[in-house]
Length: 244
Ligand SMILES: O=C1O[C@H](COP(=O)(O)O)[C@@H](O)[C@H](O)[C@H]1O
Image: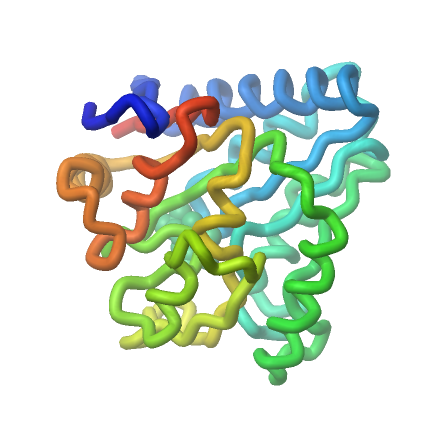
């Protein structure tokens, strides 16, 4: 695995199937939450949307002994759709955490959301008020190597990837719009996502594994935005969770 002295070296975790991956990722997140609550009385986590990590979140809610009122979560990215729309990542997260009383999920968009520019400001305000590093970030990945809503080809991609960008979140209009979720997006910027003690990437299938391996080998974040994980600071623990 590529890595240099000034970036984190990722650790691969291979599982027999998607259920085992859900258990492994949920266990890791439960440890993060317990440790953070023990150390700082709260845990602050960013969670990928999409389908792949949802079973891990469902399993995490069953972890014993976590004071969910001390856990604050935010989606890594959001689709600009109304909160009750099936494509809304925050809605999907809240549905998984329904049995975790007190857990807060910060919204990145406005409830009705036909106003992506207003949502961008809202997301920036919410994240500015919580500037501390994430205890953990979970990232998914699309077949085009996008992660969060950092889409190759999007007009806002360069700004969202720029390590000097001090904005915490940004509007992204994927080009072309992905057919399964054809909406403008609000995404955490790469610099915000990488400001984390731990990063967990979750993906399934041989095709996605090939995409991730090529992305990490190329180190080209513009063509393969998931390659940002290769730019995490050396003290950030990067875990790559994969199953067939
Ligand atoms: O659009 C998105 O896609 C990615 C990958 O989703 P998956 O369904 O293939 O797991 C996801 O990580 C991102 O949060 C989401 O908005």
